[in-house]
Image 1 (cartoon, rainbow, N blue to C red):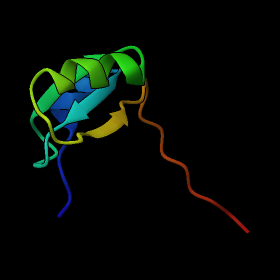
Image 2: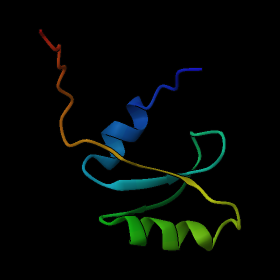
Image 3: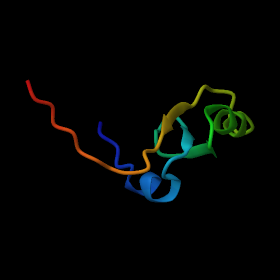
Image 4: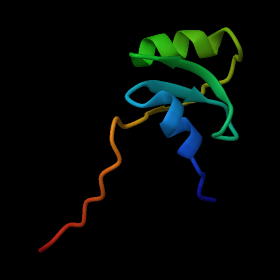
Length: 64
């Protein structure tokens, strides 16, 4: 199932985000993976889904 991360992009551009199992609930945010994970660990004992939100949205189409 595809997730709509539009709100994540608008709010967390360029940051690391730790998400709950639903991949929508933000558990932690930081400028580094360690920072986002440390905040998330205060809220859950499960391993969060970590992703870096890009600063810009750019499409890339490959060519042969």
